[in-house]
Image (cartoon, rainbow, N blue to C red; front, side):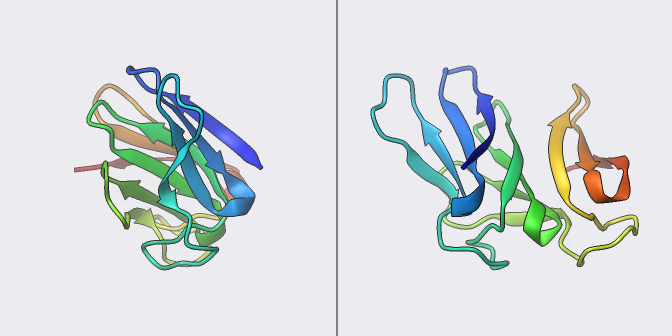
Amino acid sequence: MPEYLFVDRDHSVYVSDCCNHRVMKWVEGAKEGIVVAGGQGQGNALTQLSYPDGIFVDTLGTLYVADYGNHRVMRWTQGATQGTVIVGGNGRGAGANQFNIPYGLSFDRHGNLYVADAGNHRVQRFSIE
């Protein structure tokens, strides 16, 4: 089930395929997409996602995913077979580095990450290296 999409500057389309626990990418003109994050079943390993929602792709092709079911945000560099947790991942909660259903995300021009933390009724801002 497609949830969110992002179109990069090369006109590639990224879609969070929520119920299949993966993010897909279609390059311009492609007939089939490729898995760029997750796709290893539902779970919390670094190769897995659990109901991915909001996505963002930066100018280097790095993919950021709001991993709703794992209450974390992950970063997947281009061509990577596993991601890294950049915020959250400390269980469901309302602490400073915790989420309760992270839904959407975006960056500002200064590189700050904003995450819509739906279950906590807040938006959190993070400085990402």
